[in-house]
Length: 354
Ligand code: SF4
Image (cartoon, rainbow, N blue to C red; front, side):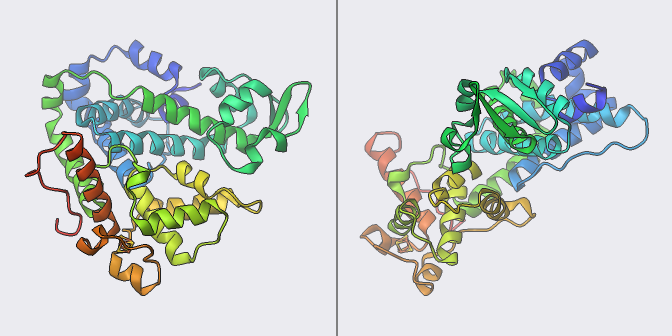
C-alpha cells in the first residue's frame, strides 16, 4: 500500500509498522507543534464518531503533510479514547472507524480487498468481481450477520467454497475491522500522558456527556434487555415475531435501542425476521436515526408514546416516570442497588431533568 492508503486504513498492520518506523515518540506525538494537525484530526475522529460518522479524508496535491497528519491522527485518537475509557465511546468509535473503512473499501478493486483481508487472516480468492471463501471461514466471518442472505443455506457452495460479491466482502471486512479496533481498546496510556491530553479530552468529554445526558445513556454500559420498559419489550417481541410495527413505534424502539448502546448491526439482526427483509434499507434508516445525517434523534417521551398509541403494558414503575429511558435508568439503578453496587442515596441519572 502507498502512504495515502496507509493513512486511510491506519488500523492495518502495515500502517502500524510504518508509524513505528517513523520513530515518533509518544511525547512528540502529544506535544510537538509540528503535529498539531494530527492531534486536531485525531480529536475530530473521536468527536465525529460520537456524532455518527467519521468523514473520509480526500488528499489533493502531492504534499506529504496532510497524509502524515491523517496517519498519525489515528494513534492519537486511540490515545484519547483510551484516556476516557468509556465503553459507550469505545463501541461508537470502533464502529464509526469500521463504517468509514467500509465506505472506502467498497470503491476498491478485488485485489486490494483481498490483500486487505489477508491482514485480518481472511483468506479469500478474488475473481473478476467476487470472492471465493472456504465455507468454514465464511461461517466465522458471517456469524454476526443475520440477514437471511448471509445464511450458508442461501449461498452457492462449490467444492467447499462460498461465492460472495465484492461489496459483500467489503461488508464482512467492516466487521473484522470493528472487532480489531474494539478489542484493542483501551490501550495502556500512562496517566501523565492523559494529563497532557487534557486540552483535547475536555472537548470530547463535553460532547460525550451531552450525548449521554440527552439520551440518558450515562449508565448504560451493557445492554440489559430484561430491564427494558414494557412498551419497548412489547415492540421487540412483535418485531421478532415478524409483526410489522407502526412507523412511530419502529422509530421509538430504534432510537431507544441505539441510545442504550445497541449497535446498528444488533438492531438490524433484531429486525431481520421476514423473508422480504431489506438489509440495506433498514441499515440506512437505523443509521439515519443514529445520527449519520448529522441529526441525532431522541426517543419520544411517554406522553408522545401515548398520543401515538405506542404505550403498552404500563406497570407500577411507569406511573413514576415520564420517559422510557428513565424507566430503564431506574430499573438499572434498582438492579445495582440489589447487587450492592450503588447506595440508596445515590441518584439515578434522569435524562429528563439534566
Ligand atoms: S408509560 Fe412510558 S415507559 Fe411505560 S409503557 Fe408507557 S410509554 Fe413505555
